[in-house]
Amino acid sequence: MNTLSQLEPYAPFAVLLAWFAYRWWSAQRVKAGLPGLKQQGATLVDVRSAQEYLQAHAPGTINIPLQQLGARLSEIPRSQPVVVCCASGTRSAMALLLLKKNGFARVLNAGSWTQLVD
Image (cartoon, rainbow, N blue to C red; front, side, top):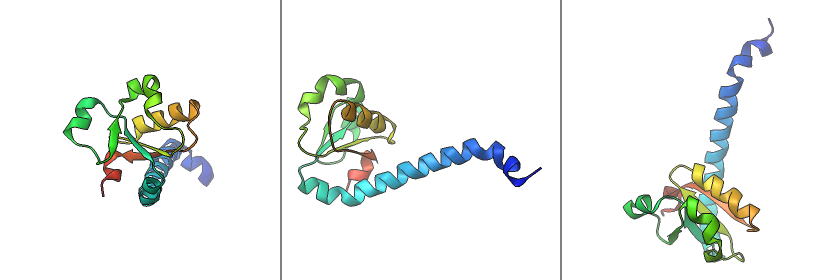
């Protein structure tokens, strides 16, 4: 038995680990670039539910729950960057795909809304 076949059972875990590492790295890049994005007039959209948003949110964000996003696209300027966030980064990843599918050119996923808190 060679080493590669011995590692094969762990491949799904490696893929999952890589996915989480990429999400973390991507959110860190957005957080680092946030001051410049704000200077460019970025719209910060929190796609959590209204109840979650009312409990706590980052300053300067607007709340458009993910399930309402498709119907409320006109509330988001297309000429500036859009930064989406949620509780963990999963809903905001779906929001990113929806926005890009609808013609928004520059959309970034900050992951957790806490990434947007100074």
